[in-house]
Image 1 (tube, rainbow, N blue to C red):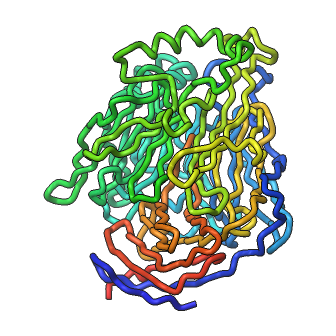
Image 2: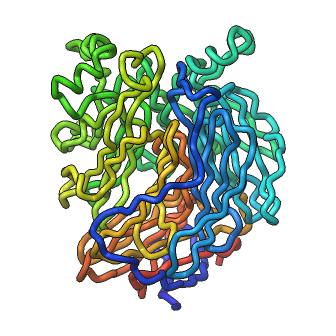
Image 3: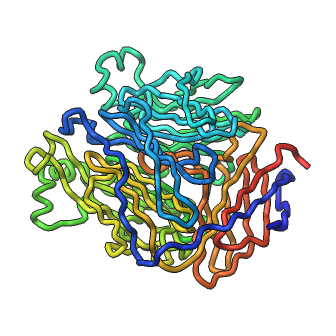
Length: 542
């Protein structure tokens, strides 16, 4: 396929486009089908103590460049798991298991750190140590040092914050957990906080934005529309979430401005995600917290040990509330919380919450995984576990969400990290959840209806080869659908570079617009549905 390339604004860039037909749609059962994966996040003796309850992360990425998305699942007491995707075209999902590393893992990202065309693994440990495993291109990973990275971290993401063509690193510590595992040495070493590492001549140069953090959630995205990625940290406990806007100095270097634009925020933010849920061009920001969706006497009795704390933190006048937040733009350019009005304020003891067009109707749906276990906090319950169902919501076409238990996503396996990706390349988003003390699960999407377009950007000649930070818009007769290339989102989860756009039945595709991280804009026509577009940017200007 040779779509028309037209430059809208900014620098003129050349691209090549390869269109690959997606596999035929699988069975149409109008629900998700659960598959157990060969991985379980375990503790040493099966008992969950303290911050072991936070679980472990996962990442999805094409690690061997065979066109199929592989999985990396973190562990506590045992080794991490690599699941190499060996699904045949049009066949059943199939993975080959390989153990990797020693566990004790929290966040995982899979990005091409060194720009050699192979995606590497970067993960955090419970002690705050950051491990870099360089992909050698032959199925192996070699441990190396990220020169200059010194501060402990819990969550991490990657973005080109100074717009110089390489990937910079952003980290946030989880002080409560690291202090528990490391002790006074953590305090004597200067602690953690929120750190931006700009890459210069092979070194990562740190700028500390905050000297402390309880950063379970972390995002890097352009929230004010100026073309430069900003940083938002979602903090646990009663530490407010923090936002830093990225302004440019005269030499183009970032100048970080701390702001607090939210009148309300979650009290114990766990996961963060963002997306255009109204197809209006305006981002919505979603944070997860602890709030029971079931207010029956039996369920509230299970929550009893934490209910007093919930009431205390929800005091009048306190901007922090123990509830999910859905921050949306108001007509004056500010933010307002619409979680209750749009039906997503209470989803249980929630961890990862992610947007994705699960039914290919052009609207971003929402999935939240939840549950909690800890020997002291829930010692009154069997196995010390608060058992809850994961919550799936369908976007009704206007940014309001309707519960969808009939989709078959209401697992009670105590989910933590979660990702959405098309693992069998049949055009719809499958879901993978890394549970705690239970098997990781893959939910194969067998919903009926709709088609999709998938996009993968490549930028040879720079170290940001996956064009992380790029924004892509698919214009159709049913509306404009927007996505951005990101390294991480949700909770402790590394994202694939592949973008998914659901296309509702009967809709006509008009054009695809790309804004690359450096501001170059391109437009192409002739895009067909049910195809994967690999768009490679020439490293030179025309």
